[in-house]
Length: 159
Image (cartoon, rainbow, N blue to C red; front, side, top):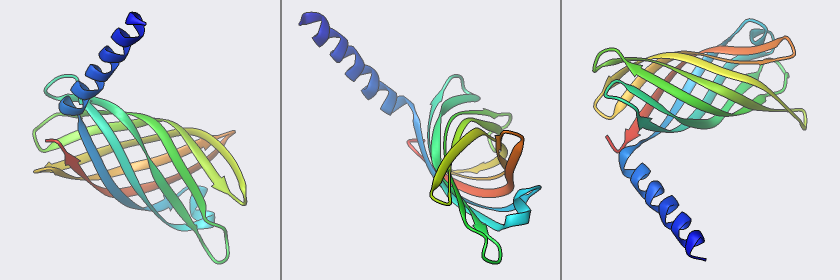
């Protein structure tokens, strides 16, 4: 029983410490589908949530998820995706950073669900607690690619 309490106390302390050391981000994005995606979709919109931990003064690692929807053209269905990914961000100046999200994207369309490799490289401009970013959101599955060029805004809590 003492071991269980000790492990629980360490886990609780770690969780509380992580909350004070990290950075919670909430954002939204819009985009233009490219490649195969532009055949069935004319517009993309979504929301993002991330939690980033500082590894050094210029480098952060974290976890991210959200929701993106490729809205169908002329009667085509809307394709939705929920990514579950790791995130990395390198600030090469106080205002500019390069980042990438890599993970798995859960896809929902026509009552069926599937998924694939999710990726989103991006470049961001930071101002105060906010950032504006330009990215390339993509999902690959069995040779098919669903992708878009995105423009987004994220607000960082805890900076």
